[in-house]
Structures are given as structure tokens and as C-alpha cells.
Image (cartoon, rainbow, N blue to C red):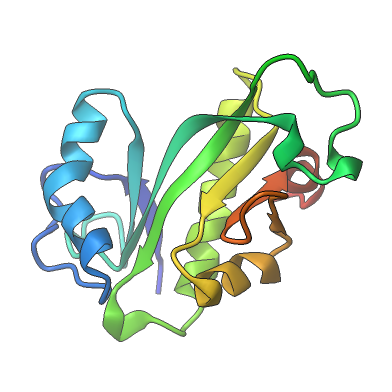
Length: 168
């Protein structure tokens, strides 16, 4: 299957998407386009091919500010301590219910990291953060190297250097 990831557009069938998590479904259907229009975040959709309008999954990227104390000591080296650190944030990642458990989440995560690295070429970001919705989601991210922040086991991050080293 020649899968493609592209920015969310009005032509995509948002109303037909369901991942089984009401908040994630609602965001895609009702909020994502507003956030794109207002420059709050960018949402990207996974499609079976470039001409498709059926959304298989999606992720949303934005920026955030974190405190150096949230990082493990080994990840703090050389970072400023007197002000917040710029970072990327994987705000949402969801796969259609009928496609879950088939590796599409990993594909979207890799795509999100590639987009993060593209943005990092133009603006500084210390890491990619994610708020996992529960322990199961946190385990998914940890499987790909995400580290628990020091103040919240569901707030995880992947240092920019780690993403760069993955040679995506």
C-alpha cells in the first residue's frame, strides 16, 4: 500500500474518523482546522494514497516551553537554566480503530519526528515532548526511546540529538 502523510486539508473526511478516544476524535473533527488556520498547531494525516480523503490516522505538532528540571540530568548538559527551553510537542497521535495494532502508529511517529527535524533546521528546539493519555500510551512512546520527564510519568520527551541520531 503506497501510504502518504500530508497536511490536513478541508477535503479530508474528518467526520468519518474514529480512533475510539472521544477527545482525539473531537479534536480532528472540530478543532484541528481552526488551529491550522490560526497558527496554533499543524495536523498531518495518514492516507492510503495521495488522492484519498479517508483518514487512517493523524498527528498534530506544535511548540512548547519546558523547564530544564523536567529533563534527566544527563540531558541537561549545556542547556540554559535561567529560562524556559523551546521544544516541539507531539500534541496528538491517533490511528483509526480498525487499523490499530498494525504498525501505523510507528509510521506516524516517525513522520512526526521527521517533521520535527525539518522545523529544527530553522528554529531551536531542545526535544520533542508528548503528553501520553495513559500508561499504555506512555509505554508506546517509551518503546521508541521517549524518556519520562522528572515531574510527570505521562509527560515524555525525546532529545533532539536522539532523533537526529536515528537517521530518519
